[in-house]
Image 1 (tube, rainbow, N blue to C red):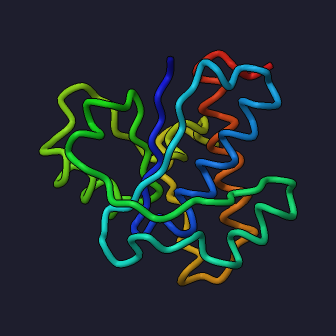
Image 2 (cartoon, helix red, strand yellow):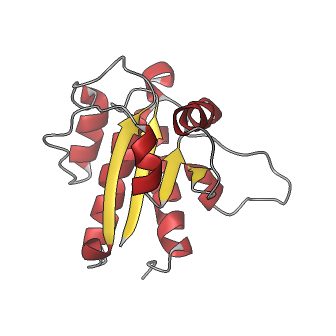
Length: 158
């Protein structure tokens, strides 16, 4: 089983969007049984809160129901539990590494690191935080692109 944990600051916008997009993609490919997919926060600010309403609405517009999701904080034990720990931006990566105490097994990456670079040597791309940008559609597009690329990387792109 491939275990994937998506991580952002509060676990109410980007990481739950990625969690539910990925769950939808593996379901549509009839390979959901091969995956365990979850999401978490690096902060405690939103613990127990549901997905932020604009993010939830966007998922629902795409036929994805995130019902029951509540923000939780990532723990050190998650490093041992998951095969892939995927942050949305560089601040998430720094906080993930602080929580885990490092990344000796190379499990931590940015979501958009899985998307082939448009040009060699291009800087790493982050999924912009729609809490600040208010552009939930751009976040949706980045999350979808990153999840599709990850599935392709894992051999589930059919």
